[in-house]
Length: 607
Image (cartoon, rainbow, N blue to C red; front, side, top):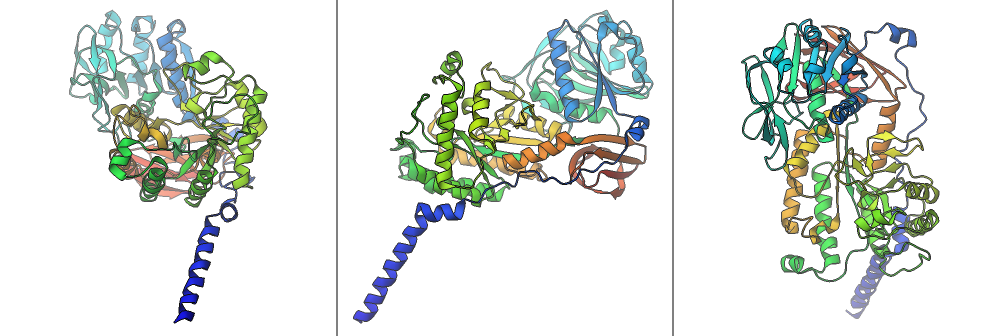
């Protein structure tokens, strides 16, 4: 009997030692220090589908943007249209409306960005271009004047009146991909619009909150006309309207997209606030660190598994506000969080990026820092030194892990901060801030691109656990125009009444689950990627030259500098008869995802 007891005690002791060893930093280092470089591009040879001589003979897809250089609104709309066309890899020309004579029939679509159509010396020639088979996109509410009165019937309008203020926008078609229900409430968006009554031939794509037509198309002769009866087409949040409008105006239209779904967790892994948050304790009977360990993180893991989400974390070492050396103070540091959550993140197929040594934005300008109640850094050298300490901190746990992704605290970054980052993290290849526009002059705003210094600009588009109309509008427009969902959350959103909208975690996680579920159901084709994987995809996309050739019965894609794969959105009402070097997946009625796997690919079509 005693012998059995001793055996049991010895077994329990060995088990305890094993468990403790498993939890130790050494074991975690061994199991977690493998570098996650899956995003790095290989040096595979590029493929070319078409020679320069053949390109010169190819009928090119080309667009014309008419603008007024003295009208900032016109120029802002023109810049937005330009950016959409650049992402689509389509050729375009810009023309001063005052010097415009008549459109060349080679242009697939002419964009009109001015308000006063009287500035067009040859308005009749523009409408004749449409009548002969061209397409015209009036991307701004026309001024109520004699010029509009001359052509309003050709725009699908039966009657017009003086401009009024309209509120809200509601889609009525799938011009936005899977966006027939997309809307922005009356309190959140205002337009100046002309009250119109449309003829029966007009196809309405969007209306205001009180049902005033805001976006419609109509046939005119052999061509089409589209009118945006609003004044905010300069906003990046409306780029899907531009892309969708182009693809509906032009028969059998195809354009490349990035096809990526990226999810960031900012401030993670990082030290969690100690103590008790009353609302959390009431619901879960846990202090803050235990809540994150036992509730929040398991919920996030479950959602990632259920809805094909891959997390990219942004590490913080400490929340002190030190901006000058020395940076050796370990107070407020929690390496156990880095070990445990960092290991979990990598095991999930995720990625470790950095937010910073602390949460002080990398700027030396005190006015910018003060806007966020931060301290300005005294110089670039201090920034670099703090980042080196951060690198050493990470290397103690993940000794062979190369950090490739940086997320600026509060989405603020100065040029000196960028230089410091490159000094301290030579493998850094991605900066992820905010997309296209912001109300703040301090934030670091990006387009998806590769900068001159080789850093991939990979902005985030939306944020938070809960949805709003504007949030959904951004998502739908971004997916329609570039095929991207890029989102971020913070673990401590649940502790912030403003960011959580006074919701508990049980409410927030339901909101977040609904967001992820609907995204997965509506856009299951989006590729779930880490930030560095998405950066590699973007670099490949940026390097690839695309040429599209059409006939009534076939579309042919030619790609130079092509490697492995490329994705496209195809809008057509025709049936597919044959496929060469590609697959086609139906997204919704008249909308398809094309996955090209060869430098030259073909899609057969029939009515």
